[in-house]
Amino acid sequence: MADNDSRAGARYADEQILTYVNRVHASHDAALAQAFAVPEGIPQIQVGPSEGRLLYLLMKLAGAKKIVEVGTLVGYSAIHMARALPAGGRLWSIEFDPKHAEVARKNIAAAGLADRASVVVGAGRDMLPTLNDQGPFDAVFIDADKQNYDHYGRWAVDHLRPGGLVLGDNAYLFGKLMEDSDTGRAMRGFHELVAAACESVCLPTPDGLVVGIKK
Ligand code: SAH
Ligand code: DHB
Ligand code: MG
Image (cartoon, rainbow, N blue to C red; front, side, top):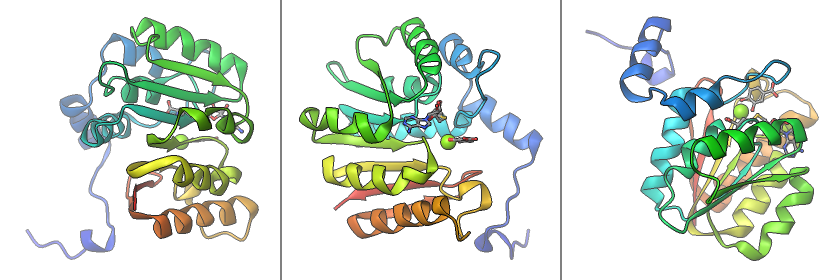
């Protein structure tokens, strides 16, 4: 079968293929299903099942013991990552909206992870400094307000151990990465500071996922 397109970024996945691979590799148990089903009034903007699974696998590969997330929503990605922690590991997830945080805490407790995963309520820019003393961290996953990605990325590289992971969802900015806007500039700033401080790549997930290993 000839393929002159995939190196240039062409995608072959269709709905049927994605349903199949998600079922085979990334199916939900009860706790993940609960955190994937968002209550009325809260947006359905979690990472997809394959990205959640990838976060889990990356945390396992990195042997992550201390993880920070910015942007909890209702805990779907947090549950994936917290499940990769060894005994004694911790995850702190920062969430601005108290309604989201309340649902996330319930979902995390239902997943049996309340002993290792905590939700910190407040804005990322205000709450990240309250975690400084817990570092250095093994991984930071950024998935909150896009206009602050450069700020969050800077905090991450300053508080990760060498070899630690920085991850950023929505790295294509919903297709608007190259726009001349505040969010476009912040997201490009994030890409460029991660590339400078890390060995890095932007994985071609539906909306791009930056993965960097701190030098
Ligand atoms: N990581 C989650 C999805 C996060 S959606 C998952 O994959 O399951 C983005 C979240 O970031 C929303 O819940 C939103 O309320 C939160 N958010 C928005 N601005 C924020 C800020 N300044 N600080 C922290 N969280 C913020
Ligand atoms: C939105 C945020 C996200 O992190 C995402 O993955 C998708 C959508 C949003 O704010 O609309
Ligand atoms: Mg996202």
